[in-house]
Image (cartoon, rainbow, N blue to C red; front, side, top):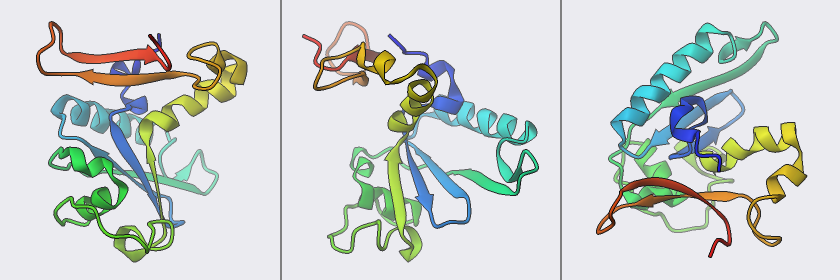
Length: 166
């Protein structure tokens, strides 16, 4: 299993990532988890100090900035238009479509929304290859998925399971 995510704040999975426009600004919207917020703030600061986050990354003129925007942690903000509303300071309620966020999203600009869990998998797939990723899960559903266990269970927390696990 690859449940190193909670220990790696720069690869946290429990957030949504939003890309707005072409100006290098990115927003992370944690779901009200104070430890995650603390770790993310630390990771963002470390990235800035090491020159891999900011307005001139590694002296190459490439911009990539991250703003951490804390939400109320509402489950509905997993829906992309509700998340956009929350980031804009409104109640996190889904909006009717069209327009779709890719055409008119955050602050009326074209917006690409991705779950950080998806982005988390890109680096190891590129580094280790697609065959490594498909070793886990099933032929139709490769990889793993993180689940939150809450309620009437003996142990609460996050677990990572192969997709198509029985």
